[in-house]
Image (cartoon, rainbow over all chains, first blue to last red; front, side, top):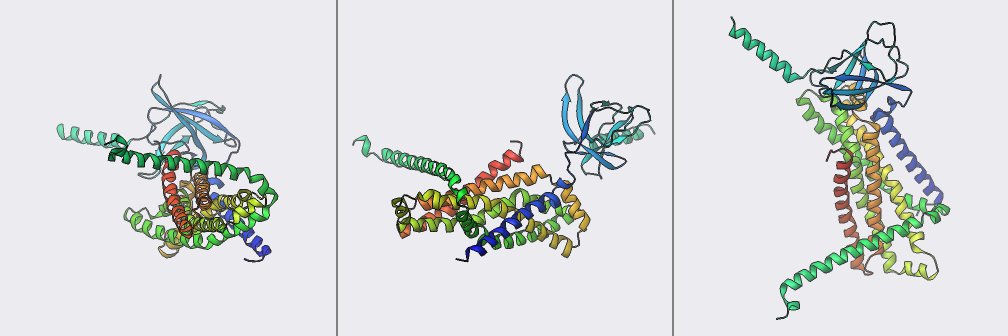
Length: 157
Length: 267
């Protein structure tokens, strides 16, 4: 058995390295460094079809991430998906006619919401609803439409 | 022929006594765990006991965990690269390596190694104390052996396990980084940024830590109980040590499925 002081030293070193490893995993490996419980506010957008959108998917303006999706639910009365967006409080100057579109990062990448800034003078307040939203593009629908149009071209020369 | 002598009776009798024996052992081990937890206040006053055990349980397992983590991470980097590059997706190597390490391999492999390295040592140590009647001697001197001998070992295992799993994951990620970025030429920025975008702190890291705490609790519980429950012969000690490793491995893998289903699955 080692001297008790050096035992304590090695134990201290071990615990220190272990905590450093946890810290490393939190900061470097996961998104904790960009994750913030900072001030934020909610906006709501309704879509006919949200495609593969998920909770925590990013929300961007001009390609810059300004928030995340906090909740997705379904409105059974209007047959629409309700997407709750949590947006950082510093970005609170969106005109009331701002609209939301669902895009895909890359051909098969994850889907995200992009806000298209409007031109009204008044700003959206927390809890407001975005109108004029563009649903997700579903690849199968596009391919289906493309095939249909080709078939029609053939049929009417 | 009386019914008591028929072979059907014998089969059910054996099954029944096995079942009763298992239940009895489960009950004894649960009471044992409760008595360990009662020893936590005593342990706070005598932190020296805990530190010595942290050394023999945690620090001495450190090197094994670090080296295994390095190689597991490097293999993941290599295997992941060969498959991902077929799809032109080698940029996502970081996510693959980190997610598989943090979610599964880190807690599970380090718990298996921990059971083999520290768990078996704990069982053998306590078992030999039973064989040489050291624990009975302590009881004679009105020292509670559970508080004095068992509780420090149990809590040392409980504390060490999440730290070891975190070290395993960290070194594994660095090993994957070394192979992926250093040797195979994956873009460094994509490696880290995709990893950070793909892994969530609560979903992945915290769940991995919870897993390793559960595994640490179960493995050390099995180890100290098997030691305490040893049949006091040299053969008994060897059987108890074997049982510790086997039961720990079963418990880890089965619990891992349950925990994964609860945390990540939609069962």
